[in-house]
Image (cartoon, rainbow, N blue to C red; front, side):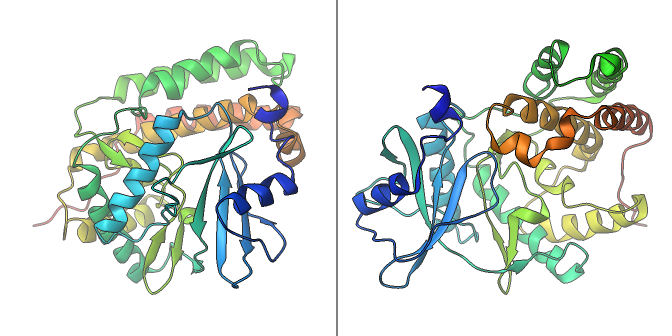
Amino acid sequence: MNDSAFTFQTLHPDTIVDALFEQGIRVDSGLTPLNSYENRVYQFQDEDRRRFVVKFYRPERWSVDQILEEHQFALELVNDEVPVAAPIVFNDQTLLNHEGFHYAIFPSVGGRQFEADNIDQMEAVGRYLGRLHQTGRKRPFASRPTIGLEEYLIEPRKLFEDAPLIPSGQRVAFLKATDGLISAVTERWHTRFDTLRLHGDCHAGNILWRDGPLFVDLDDARNGPAVQDLWMLLNGDKAEQRMQLETIIEAYEEVSEFDTSELGLIEPLRAMRLVYYLAWLMRRWADPAFPKNFPWLTGEDYWLQQTATFIQQTKTLQEPPLQLTPMY
């Protein structure tokens, strides 16, 4: 795949309309871009006033088998009555192709933003995450990766070594902070958990509220520990996070058992996400959308802040992990 395709420069509106027409869908509105940097996602209305979302996958990110595993997982969840946005099947296929681009079409699902500070909503999310994980435990992904140190820390560290985006004056301090963080995570990371298929990126922005939660965007689905789908929902100070965690787990355990020994992985997982996210920005810098939307990545202040963030997270990893309130 050439660079112009990799950065979506050849994905024109006419290309999108033609791809949809091949599936018998006539676009009768504009193509409204939705917030997605990794892929290209558009909402539209057809001539029968039905609303859809079309998602064009970034070339060379996932293999066909990996995308199909995402789709199969979504369809299994729907079959198990877990509220997720699943792709529409066209002629027994969910993954479609047009001019070298893989894409999928979804029903457009509206909803309000999930309120992370709403206890009732948090309980419902915890309950449905338990059901999502019941489906995820039936079998692991065969093609998609498993969360681990190599992908989230070791490979990004290699990328940082000669990354031109890091100012020369900040490089030594930043790499030292990175190495300290990797060392702290490595000491605390373990794989003594039951591996299951996960949503993978379960933060508040990927949950809509429609008289209950609706999980969207399984693009980062992969194997890993159950706690990966819980910790990103936590916010605030330690006391607030403990209360939120207790709410989620109590509801979760109404339908699925949760291994509390995984709580010790929350801060390692947070650190791994910090490092992986920064490497992701670097890898996507050739896409014109990234310099446009992340201009601060070229500034020295940003790298000073990242160095400080890595140092602080290293200190956090030295503290006792978040625990539930003991029951007497």
